[in-house]
Amino acid sequence: MTARAIGTSTISFGLVSLPVKLYSTGESARHISFNMIHKACGTRVRQQGFTQQVFALNALNKPAPTGIFATRLNGQWMLFDWLGREKRIKSAKDYQASAASMGEDANQQIVLHVVEAYQSVLYAQRRLTVAQYEQGTADALLRDAKTRVKAGLAVDSDQLAAQVNLSEREQETIAAQGDVDTAWAGLEAAMGVSGTPRRTLAPIPPRNYPANPLTQDIDQALKVRPDLKALRQQNSAQRAQVAAARRDFLPQVDAYGSWETDRDTFAGNGGNNWVAGVQLKLDILPFGKRAHLLAAKAKQQQVEAQQRARQQAIRLAVEKAWTAHRTAELQVKTAKAAMAQAAESLRILRNRYHAGLATMTDLLRAEDAERRSRNDYWRAVYGNTVSYTQLMYATGNLTPAAAEALQ
Image 1 (cartoon, rainbow, N blue to C red):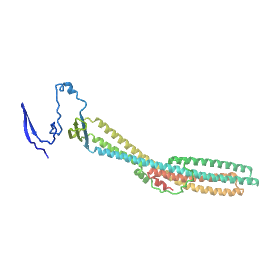
Image 2: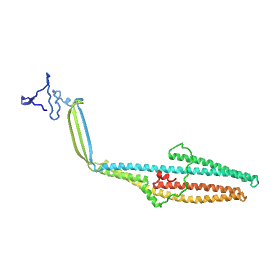
Image 3: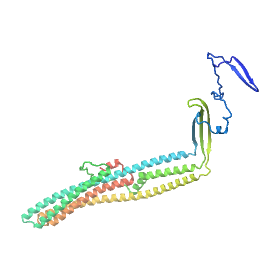
Image 4: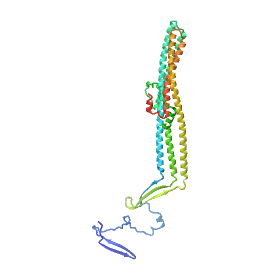
C-alpha cells in the first residue's frame, strides 16, 4: 500500500524552491537518513561534494580505474541474404554425399582385391594338387621303368629319363607350395589380417555367368558407378558454391541488438540501456568477392572436366572387362576340350608303351602335355571368375553380397 504524506511544505532559498512531503515512520531510531531516488531508474542518487580540483583538466582525462562495473550483451543476426546460406548448406551436404560415394567405391575395390587374391589361392592350391599327382605318377613310372629294365623290356636310358622326370615333378611340387604361400600372403594383405591358419579353400566350381550386351553394361556403369556418382555430387556442390558467391554481391539485411548495464559495485544495481535495429549492408568495392567467384567457377570447371574424363575411362574399362570375360569363357571351353584330348592321348600312349610300341620319351611327352592341359584348364576357370568380378566392378555392381553369389 502506498504511504500517504501527513504534511507538505516548500523550502525556498533564492530563486530555488524544493517541494517537501512529510511521512510518518514506525522506527524509533534517533537519527533518520533520507535518500534521493532517481525517478527514471529507481536507484539512489549519490551525493558527493565537488571542489575545483575535481573539475581540473587532468582529473577529467584520468578517471579512476576502479569503481565502474559494466555488463554488455551484443548480438547480430542475418535476416536475408538472397538464399546464399541455403546454397552453402546444400554444397556442404553434396560434399558429404560425395565422401560417402567415394567410400562405397573404396569398398568395392577392397572386394575386388579380396576376390582376386582368393582366386589366386584357389589356383595355387589346384596347381599344387596337380603337381603332387604328377609327382606320384612320375614315381610310379620310375618303378615301372626299373622293373622293365630288369626284365629286359627297356634300356637304361628309359630309367634315367624316368628319374629326370621325377626330379622335375618334385621341383614343380616345391614351387607350387611356394606359390600357395605367396598367394596366402596376398589374400591376408587384401583382407587386412595376418596369421590366419592355412587351410584348403572351397573351390569355386566352373559356371557360366550372366551376360549382358556391351551397351547395357556401359549404360549401367554410367548410372551406378560410385566414383562417377561422387564426381556428379561434387559438381552439384560447386554449382551451389558459384550461386552462393554470386549472391554475395547483393545487399544483405541484418538485425542487431545491444544491452548494457553500469553500476558502482560488482553486485549492486545501476542504470541500463539497450539498442536494436536493422541494417542493410552493401559492398561497394567487392574485389575479394569477385576473386572468390572466379575461384569457384574455376573449381566447377575442373570438376566437370574430371567428370567427363572419368566417363570416358569407365567406358573403356567396361569394354575391356566385357571383352576379357567373353575371352575367358571361350578359353574355358577350349581348355576343357584340350584337357579331355590330352587325357585320351595319354591313355593311348600308356597302352602303347606297355605293349612295347612307344618309347619312354613319347610317354613322358604325353604326360607333360596332359599336365599342362589341366593347369591351363584351371587357369581358365579361375580366370573366368576373376574377369567376371572385374566386369562387375567396372559396372559398379561389385557389392559384398554379389561377391558371395560367385560361390
